[in-house]
Length: 313
Image (cartoon, rainbow, N blue to C red; front, side, top):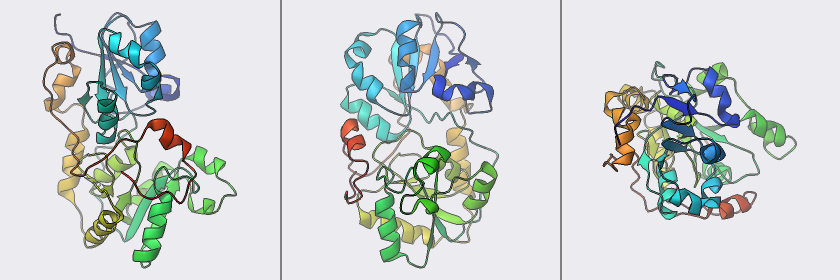
């Protein structure tokens, strides 16, 4: 098959707003031709791939893995369907399902690559979903901070949808939703982020902090990620990063911006069909030095409100 450039991308309804705003992939055309090669953002695109697309399809796997699990036999028999993993955590799930993939830091959200590195503040930042949910490890970090870092402030935040759902719950007042302007000011107050989830795509929060020179305790494997497998690791990371308060990490910020720039010349292979059809070797782009395990996705979802759940990776 002759090599072609992939120049179109499909966003499912839940991500369709990215067709009309600045984002990492705005140099690609909105989906226009079912016979030509195309990227499909999210596992939620699987119906469109199955029912309308005839050409080569590359699914960017960034969220809920169940559409893949539910259609695994069909996926493995479908010709010209390929996969991009967006984090080390996602790569592990795809490996477990026996799905070959390419690692690539593809994020739909707006990543301001022109942002300046911040002088590090004296707070720890945690972005979660709800105060009674364990998915992002709030029950873990809340206890760690109280027992080991009572002198440090933990700034917590969540998405507006989660904020409305958690009204009236204990600690719900600690989970505000910030506008982008407010968030930019919050980022100036912190020296490390925390994201203790077992399942994740390319976290926009982690990348937002990375381009500002701030690391996040997270197992996703991007340049600003600090991997962990125990509470001791988390505590040590916070202690180490606390020593950087008042400094500006321009080197990390520059590294993250280059890493996240889809127009980076070294990423040209991602947009060539022969990378996929010829099964070309591609670089690993996510790194984690810890021994991680995969929890079945449905099990992960089913225990969401168990706030006594111990840390696991």
